[in-house]
Every structure is written in structure tokens, then in C-alpha cells.
Image (tube, rainbow, N blue to C red):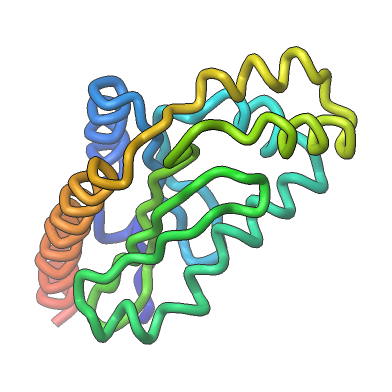
Length: 183
């Protein structure tokens, strides 16, 4: 496909919607392009923003986790409203919903930076030591990570897939407009 997601969807509107949703739910949202570049995002957890995404080794782990959706693209495209749920390499849960427009994977909507159950303090203490994080500050950031029961996660996934369907429709309409202008 010759167009990028940012060519056919107004990222500023997406950013505003994501900020409202994150403020309401307390749960992070982000849209990444296929190369894992962040196009829009809101509600980042401190543990990710101040620690995981600011240390070279843990950032690499974030990028590897975010990129894992590529391993599932064929299945997700066939499912039309499929999603990929995973535990990131830094220990938090995430959900990725790829955005396909005109048969191409143009972006992925992510939510996460959450836990499904009680925090495994020992895992995060070891991680703080391994990467040289200030343990008290890191564990304080961990204490703010939302714990979201699986049942509630299913409602979030339902919202996200509907949101992606809306983005896809908007993208297809814009793509048709661009093609008509060219013709």
C-alpha cells in the first residue's frame, strides 16, 4: 500500500479520543505504525514511561513485545476483528488490535500496561536490580499499575475492536477520496 495510516486517518482526533478514554478508564491506549513507532498515545503508566521505555534494554523488550503482533497478523486479518493478547517481556499484560485498511496492516491499537491479578513483587524487585532501577521508585510505579479482572478485559477488547472497525471505515473512506482525487 502506498499510503501510511497518518495519510488517511486524522491522528489529532485519535489522540483526543484516546486521552478522553484513558482519563475515564485509567487504562493506557496507543496507536503504533507497523515499525512500532508511536503515532498517538495516552494514559501511559509511570512504570513504562519512566522505567521500561527509558532504559535501552527494557525498551528493546517493549519493542519486541509490541512487535510480536506481526507473528499473528495472518490469523488476525482472517478473523477481521481479531486481537492478540500477551504478557510483555517486562511483566505487564497488553492487548493489540491490528488495523487493516484495504488489505494492508497500517497500524496497531494497543492497550495494556496492566495486570490481571495481584502483583508479583518478587519478579519486579529482581527486574529493578537487573536493570539498575531505583527499587523504591520502581515498586511505587508498580503499585499504580491497574489490576483489571479478565472479565473487564473482555469488555475493553470489545470496545477496542469496535474502535478499530470505526478507524478502518474512516480509513477506507479517506482512501477512496484520495483515489478519486487522483483519478
